[in-house]
Image (cartoon, rainbow, N blue to C red):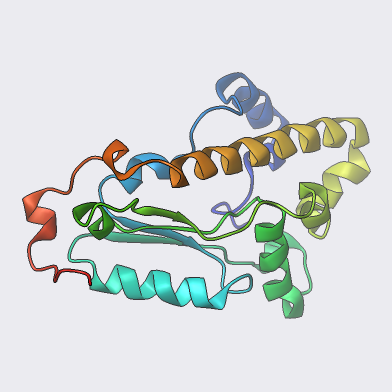
Length: 190
């Protein structure tokens, strides 16, 4: 199974219960701490090939570490692999996989380094999730629990996107300044 993209609520029932106690929808995602230290992007080629290309170009140009989180469909998701790019687009459209780029170089020129590249979710999470067997299986075997977890997932998706929208609206001064060691060798942006 592709654990890297399997949501927290689709694993074992015991793990789901532990996570419910530990996670709250208002918590920040794990990507936020990594953002302050490097060039970071979240991409899905099936949703926006141009954004994916920009993210790779920025990562290549950045002199420090770069991290690109790419949505990768796999056979374990239980989708027709010929429709993988469409499923990536649905993941973005549902807000499950928002596209963003964080370029620390933008801090040095006084601009917000965080750019949210995907629009607000246009479809409910359910429309994305129930295309995949990993979600449908729970709905078929435990429909009440699936409905409850789907509602929790939708709330988490909404909260994550709201958080990213908030960060995208921050003034550049809210971000830590770029250290001299980070800017060494970076040509000025015109």
